Image (cartoon, rainbow, N blue to C red):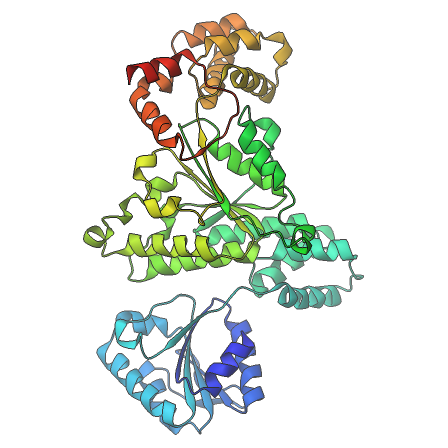
Length: 501
């Protein structure tokens, strides 16, 4: 970042727009850059007016027009940082925009530069060609290490071992310097030491504040999912894909997978289990949270979400039911001025070009709503199709669900239950056992095979309610997607659906 800033100023760029929420960190970087290239640094805010960063306050100019007018009085080779100036740009005041354009023209000939420092991008069309935009990345491990050493010194703690040191910095990745400092300090207060678990907990809260991403705390593993043996095997083969050994081997970083299938067949569970396979955090992106009411806000949100994911990397990024979030991208030009299309395009371009170790797992129920550009090779490593569980898979699912709710699966006839629930999805099997638990609880006894059988008499599986849609999905997936299960789908309902069509 420091090198880029220095190059822009040396090249005579009169207008820079820095997008970052870390005001103090950016000011420190600008101060170092100004000293390196022989420029003087000034800062302006509505509360302090114009301030010489080396000598203190010099002018009581608390209005934006006064601040811009004062640029002409600054000496050559000066940099003026405008704090929170995006608020005035957002208002699109004609006088502010006109004066800013005039000042930028004059500043270019006098070796002066104006730097707008803002937490988000809000650049009116009038200034798009006048200013250079820089998205400032979150702190690197090296920068976080400086904060860590400061906390160790102030708390008078002994140096951490190499493993502890790496674990603490890994837990802090994705935080700003202030957030990392607060997380380190809290860990010292709570545990009298620096614990990755405390820091990771604070990181989850910090990420949640953005409203764009959520860190999912999941203990799921592949053994908690019945069936899907081919998909599981594919993930296990890449278990060490994010390790140092993989980099030495020059193994390319896996991009991710798209999982298509019927609702309730374990698509989201597989995404959660993938994080445990790789041993990395799981982030969830809700596309609905990306869209804002202000011009440019949605595009800024997708950039921020990508920046956070890359800062936390290596990680797994789950986009659940992706077709619902971006189904309107095709008609975006006539419905929302092209916002959905631009946001979706930014996401696709990042998925294609990303080098950061972010493994994207996207799930979809309705393949007909998926844009064709999402399915092309290069966005995902593989596309898997998840069908209704086979009899053997249902037997495993019954065993897993019974054990999940604290019962001994050996006390139930899982083989018979698997035959009885032909055409059921995994979530329907779980819900049937929950109903049996409620029935047993109401009658003051433990559930048994008879209780479950009584519950199943009232269950209508999704395979009957959505027979046509399931058949259509099977036909589309044949030859276009890899099967997630090796076993043939011999269910009666499957035959019945295919025969009817």
